[in-house]
Image 1 (cartoon, rainbow, N blue to C red):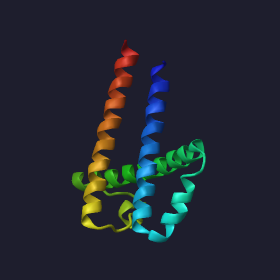
Image 2 (tube, one colour):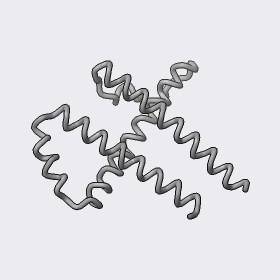
Image 3 (cartoon, one colour):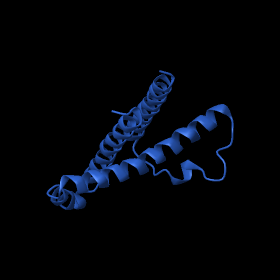
Length: 123
């Protein structure tokens, strides 16, 4: 298996998982959507995985923007024209902490993927 294909497969799997988790959090926060979401589970798996992958991609981009903003604040640089704090919805502190932990895990995974890509290309 080509390493690029493996990376893409891993990234899609990660995004599906991230999107499914984001959907689960949304369902837990909004009981009215619970019935709608449960009926969606009866849909074909490929449709759901594509939807979750898309939602995971959006969530990944939001998390990346959030981390970039935090890093910019730590290093003293301005966040630029688009501030992630203005678009980041407020959440309870425990959810924010969990999001920060997940974001840190994403950063670590991306670093590991880059290391593997570099290692594979030099082989």
